Image 1 (cartoon, rainbow, N blue to C red):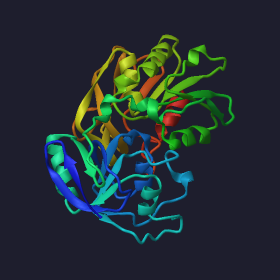
Image 2: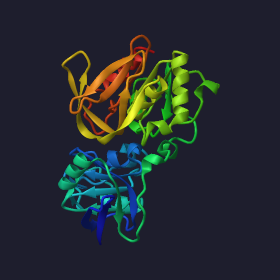
Image 3: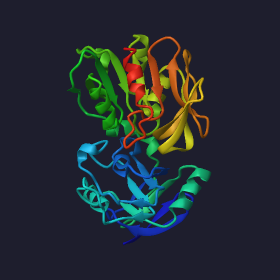
Length: 343
């Protein structure tokens, strides 16, 4: 089925549909990485976005069991690839990528101009776009929606056993964050983004604010919880969106990046050293103004933007990248241990 991607500036890209046969709109972004499309597609941080994968071959190892996903369903609005492979070969493959997309009603395009499209996004910034297949729809900016409220958990859930209890504020958390915490012998209490843990009847030793989609300033209830955590001196860690939320709670500010950081090969430099780590990232916003009492922890090796903050006195810290990265790299998984040692 012939279809097209239409950008807000009028640019059109023609292609062939291999997903669900209906139209969608969203923000068009690209991600660099040779593998990991099942993890990317199920990452709640991609909510509202049309994802362009820059690696040309996609679908060649099929779709694994849901136990390996980062959430219970596909989160992207649409998918764009250069070459779709409909004959996967992998012992864990349960179905083709095309079938998975159709099962979950997600449109997808195979087209030959993904290199030019990625370069256009780098030069002009992430545009609004729409995949047009069956009907005409309007452009829609997902960053004007409270996407965190759409992807957050709806109820409190307790898992694991241990002497220490950590509250995971789910702003669109990837499953591997929880896996890393449970593997380290912690009890994990997952709560919705707007849940007031300080009004609850359970005791906890620390708070972790997860990743998530959209503008961090939309997550006003989570920001209020983070403010209380700082006031009560509760050890607090943030990941990705959680990095921005912690900064806002402490009096800092955030801004929207031109085209964001998305992929498995983002370099971050540890402040005060020459150590550089390879990281997985997925965000369109970043910290602009540093909050009082904090100092930069990591810096992006490509554009010099902030990649993490840490308090000069108390156990408050956050990172813009994903230390729980699936499907890798695992260079920064030590961040979890560093935080847990300071509970």
